[in-house]
Image 1 (cartoon, helix red, strand yellow):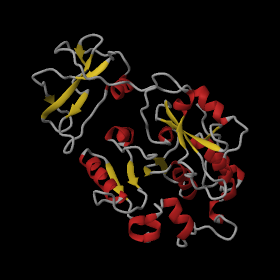
Image 2 (image 1 turned 60 degrees about the vertical axis):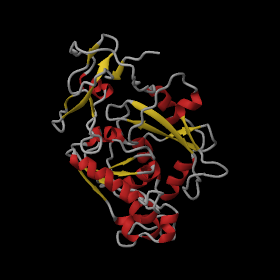
Image 3 (image 1 turned 90 degrees about the vertical axis):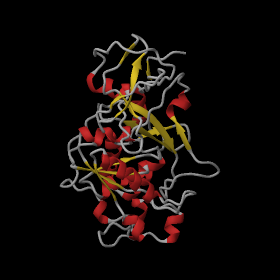
Image 4 (image 1 turned 180 degrees about the horizontal axis):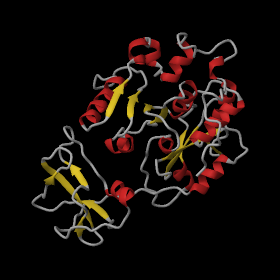
Length: 338
């Protein structure tokens, strides 16, 4: 099978000036349909550690559309890439309108009043899946409102914890629907917020549920979730204009001797070298106990169980009064439904 775009694999290798680091280390993308190179900034720098510049055909076409004038030079390539498949909005709408039980939403209702719960459901487009009774659909929607993926997860409605026994309850909408030739290209969960909610800072956590809860705890920033995906430079590209704060889960060292905090620090250093304003929060790393590390606490876990300084720890009524919906804190207008 031949696909439209691919990295140039001509021999001898042709390398061009990288628009980021200025060195002659850029391998450009080839348009296999018309036999030409794409514009001269569409490519990948070979200095993957010291530069890591990578402008894909997908990102280029999303930025300017498909009307471009390629340069006639070079030969066909054998290496190919696939452009992503986007999901129709009707599938999202269907999961938002179901009356079936949703354990995560039931858990949110235990913590918050109904209007705050509904606000969070609408803001993050939390859907209901029937794949497992009570399961939640987390839609990954980018800044252009393209729906990249639907991630199905099952939670306990009483504890809010993920159901991992007798197996880890995670599935994908495209796998359940058996869409042929679906090309998954993940983006941050909650990315669509950057065009509809004003905030100067963006905070990135790992869990989708944590992003939802932290929006209730600290609403004056935008909360995104990586959802366990690899934090590639391409994922961060829409966020370059913002101040970024990363909140990795706390954990023990992996086989390479690094904690989640140290691995996210490495990613932050690379982003800084590319002009991003980014930092990694050390709150959990400095304060978590050994037991909390072994359980893989995230920011919401920690604050809900231990915080007294900000008044966010759960009280005898199972939630802090400060989490109740406050019209002076949260927007009162109906969330824009695209």
